[in-house]
Image (cartoon, rainbow, N blue to C red; front, side, top):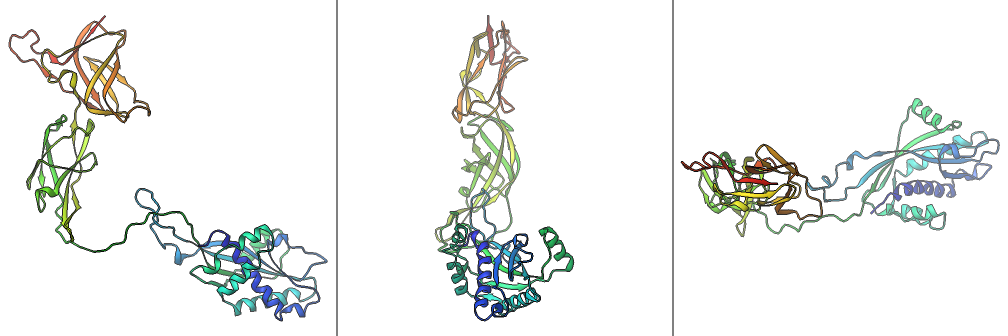
Length: 422
């Protein structure tokens, strides 16, 4: 595969092409001074009274090759993983300038160079290999360029004349900050630069199967109850909930892997909330699989849009909640509560005691991913009092009950309660 060294290799190949033609009966026998072939910027070419006959190649611009622009795309998957190494395909644009201290030297050299390129519009692989091999004993930079795999790339190098207007040529030479010399321009295409990074490759397909189905995606109309706790059974009503078989319909909580439902009907699905679902506003989807193929493997085919219900935390310290559910703590002490479901370390947690509240910050990265226990520091300024106790996780608050027993001393009060002593 070609690397970035191939760009320098093209200049070396063009120079070698001219040098070979020069020694095979070129203008060297007509000119009074030895002819040089260089590949450098025009402002670095020596000029003046002792100016030597010279042809200079200068790559002044590299453009993208439109034919290869979209080859092997897309190169990355949805997760950003590398799927392919698409080639960087370049067209290289060259100025060919002629120099000479004697009359007619530049014209002779430029005409001869244009004839050489006209007779060699496609450069053979053998010529490329020979040109790169000849660089092996030159400078360190030339040795690096000689390692290019330019000769083995899929596309051959093609030389095409390129017409520049007088204004474009004038601007280029003004940028060089040197005196103008007879000039023409060529495009060399295409140089394919490949990377060699490891990519993800899927296993080959051994059998192909296809299934054609009507577009009847599941639709969720309602989730009951809208506020639930871990272990509750949700009743999901809607349309197109039943596929070929009840086991083909599953439920996904918070975009996690779908789980089996307890009951599946065409318009109703019942599912128990697992303890792995975090408290807060929980998106829910119905996922229907389709079985087809040699082994009748299930394939995820249809998904409903997301519908949201609220999963509230439960205080395990006072479960079940009764009018006698009171937690006592001294002011200035730490109150540790056991919460269900477990709380993720990046979830916001807040304790409410009546109209007072305490918020604890997100747990540090060193803490476990989830924890069933939270510690709330009770301010020294609190107390003494006894008020309804709630815990809020990501906006979802634990539930309270009301003592509705006639004649009870706590009739009409909310429980559980927090009692702060001094």
